[in-house]
Image 1 (tube, helix red, strand yellow):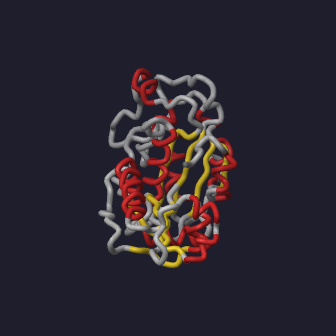
Image 2 (cartoon, helix red, strand yellow; image 1 turned 90 degrees about the vertical axis):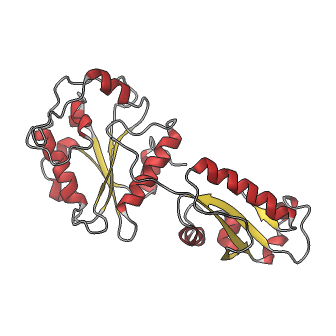
Image 3 (tube, one colour; image 1 turned 180 degrees about the vertical axis):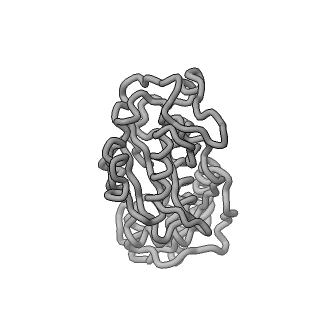
Length: 277
């Protein structure tokens, strides 16, 4: 699980910048790259009770009032969350970059016509000038997919709530169960053997997991060492699709976790040696 309150964790996840609004508004081109990606807005005072402005500094969009009622802001606010907004820039068929999209976002604070109406509630925070912006450049992954991934993880950490200034949970996400074949060398590991007392000699050794990522992507992540299981990383050699009973995709993480457990039990009954977290 991600830790959205840890700057160290976010940096290890590839986020850069961590520049204050006061500095960005002076010269965004000095800091923000011209690539697609995702970005976060952080509240350095997240441990304090927020103070909301009746009238924020955001401009209108097509004549629409940008301000929420104080009551709605209080209902939307997520206590003890450093992250107040998750956004994306670019994607298939889109030319926007982190620089252009964040530029539009920042411009909303100048009480001009707003081209970034989503996330506008941050401009009703009394300490909006103290907010911190960070971003992660994406060269291969879809910004929409990563944004949805971040929002899903945020909801996992904060009891199914979305960030204060987000209006929805991004595009609908699927979850997947996957089975990685392991080299028989893994049987030399005592801990692995202890987990599989009913193993039938000659049957496959496998790792069973579930993820937001499609199986082929998650398999590569394991091999590359990204949030990998040590057995999958060292002994994994290919994905098993046939005769596993997996019925991807699953509409929620809860269903995928249930299917992961069922797959583990089913394969063990067949005499497989299985490792699952």
